[in-house]
Amino acid sequence: MSNKSHRLIELMMTVNRKRKFTVKELANDFNVSPRTILRDLQELSGLGVPLYSEVGPHGGYQVLNERVLPPIAFTEEEAVAIFFASHALRHYSSLPFETETSAALKKFYFYMPGDVRDRIDQMKNRFDFVIPVRQVKSPYLGILLDAAVQQKVVCFEYESKSGKLSREIQPIGIYASSGLWYCPAYCFMRKDYRLFRCDKISSEIRLSTTDPIDLRDIHLGNRIAITKEKKTPLRLYVELNREGVQKCETELGRHINVNIREDGSGWLENQIDPQSIPFFAKFFIGLGKDAMVKKPSILIDKIKEMLIEMMQQYK
Image (cartoon, rainbow, N blue to C red; front, side):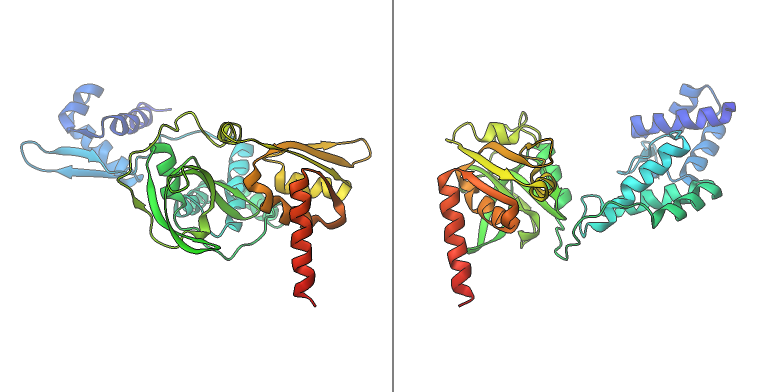
C-alpha cells in the first residue's frame, strides 16, 4: 500500500473520530502541508465521505451525520456470504434499515470483480431463504429499535380486538417471525410486559413524556425468563409426530425447545404464560392431528371451545 493510500485510510478514520476539524489541525497531525490535506479531503469527499465546510474565523470541516467506515478487506467467500445474507431480507415488506440494506447490496455488487458478479448471478436463482410473503407494512421498525437501545418510552395507536387503543410502551427489541415483525415491550397501560405486532401500529409513533423504567438488563435473549418471574406459569406438554416436530421447530423453535426422538417424533415441554393460552390454542388447532396437547387442562378446554365455535360457523 502506498504512503498516500495509507494516509487516506488514516485520514478517513481520523475525520470520523474528530467529527469537526480544521485543515491546519490535520496537516499538523499528518505532518504534511495544508495543500496536501485539502487534496486528500477532496478525494475523500469524492469517495463518499460526507464532509461539510464552514468559512470564517471559526470555520473548518465537519462530518455530517452519516459516517463512512474505512475500507474493509473481504475474501471472495465472505463478500458473497454477506451479499446473500442481505439479499435474503428482500422477502420482508418492511425492514429497520430498508434503504441502507438496498444501498449496501448495490455497493457490494458494483465493486465486485466481474467473475464474482457472474457467480452471484448464477446463484441468485439457486439459493434462497424462503419466508411467508406478507402484504402488511411495519414502517416504524427503526424507531422501535432505537427506543429499545436508547431506553425511550413511545406512544401510538394500536389495533386490537377491542378497536384502536392508545398505548405507551418501552420496547425491549424487535424480531421477525414467519414474515411478521414483533416488539416485546413493557406496557404502561397494562403495567406488565406485552408482545406487540408491529404492523398493527396504526398511527405515527411519538416520544412520550413518561419516565422510562430500567430495562438495560432485559433483551430478546432473556426476556421470557425475566418477564415470567412475577407470574405463575403453566406446564405445557404436547406430543408431536414427525410433521408436528418440523412445524414446531419452524414456528416455536426460538421460544420453546422441541425434543426429538430417534424416530423423528417428539414432544414439547415448557413453562408458558397463562396469557398465551389463546395463542397456543390457535396454533395447535392449526397443526391438526400432528399435535396432541396433554397439559395444561386450561389449554385443552380453550381448544375445545374454539373448535365448537368453528363448527357452529359452518352450520
